[in-house]
Length: 259
Length: 259
Image (cartoon, rainbow over all chains, first blue to last red; front, top):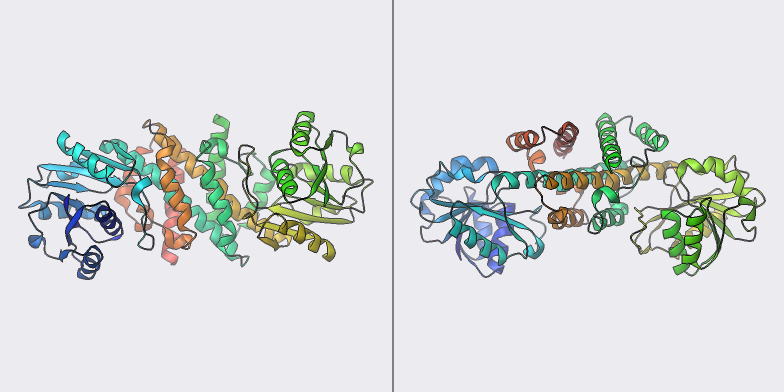
């Protein structure tokens, strides 16, 4: 497909590279920030613009990968003059209906569920992509586009996608926060976070085979209050970690009780 | 080394297999539960006993891998008559001093930091092992034993090990709890936890390269309250998850503010 990228941040960069690899043409990049637009356009060997009115009208698809809260304001501007072309956004938690006031006649969502960093170039082949669109024919177009990047393409309406995004916050952002707390605790002992990596990897590998609930180990699932109290004593100068330790241990106990 | 295993649970089983693979002789298994003792002895092709007095006195090392809270009561029983042989326990959060009332003259700790399940046979080569002992010569013995299993052996006193174990609770048990919450949320949408695996893997892979703090993404680190409020609305029937969501998002915000 002949594609224009609206946005030049982390997600736009990763998507642009993946789409190009998948055999599609990135015709142009638009971003309000010239340095970002230029950098991504160079990486994708295409044109760029920082003016909405200079976005080409001759694309088959506009992929809008910008911050969630920019969408309502930005969409009418980029849609204007391109009302009959397909627009998609890429946000996990923004409903399809964000397009309703934009003037677009054909619109959809193309959400690759992953944590993207500029530092890491990811293979999209295992990244699940969730699509939807207002027209049935465009659902099929997006499903085909998804299949050119990934083996895992699902059609999922907005409400389900929002819940999926919420689950992803737990499985990624909150998980990463727990890593960050471990790093903080180790730093006080002058130990590098590296000593945790084998444990981190096995914890992730385990849930490929076992349900997370059944995979649980440690003092909380054993309700070993003697160990837990010693841990809390070590944390006493970190009130915020004490609260996290107590709440998460309680949660582990609750889920174990329901098994 | 010529080794007796005291205990036949998850950790004893994984350790026994690893020690055998590492070229050591498991002479005998002791457990109060006959079925467990027998099963592990068969796997290790060795004798077993369920009577403390029948534990052989002719071993070079006794590895005590039992539940933390059983140690203070069990140690004097198994040490009696074997006072001059080296004893180690394998618990992350139990100090070396647990041996002080046991009668043992030579004692130490041999703590492989990992999450063990009976369902998964693990290679020990990347598992960090933390050792200490009351005698310097035994520290060296344990370091050598550790090196026969793993490339990563560290000498670490009890206080540091306790903090390490606390960090491991965050990086493993609390992480796994976040996976379990994601599973719970997805189940309400009839989506299998499998859709999360690529995200789970990348979240773990990322912290091999980036500090967890710098690897953070998502609504909380962006302080995107519009998305967070929508997530909280979805969770409204799950009070416990609302509390977790708020507290962890707060923590993410705090750590981001300190960067």
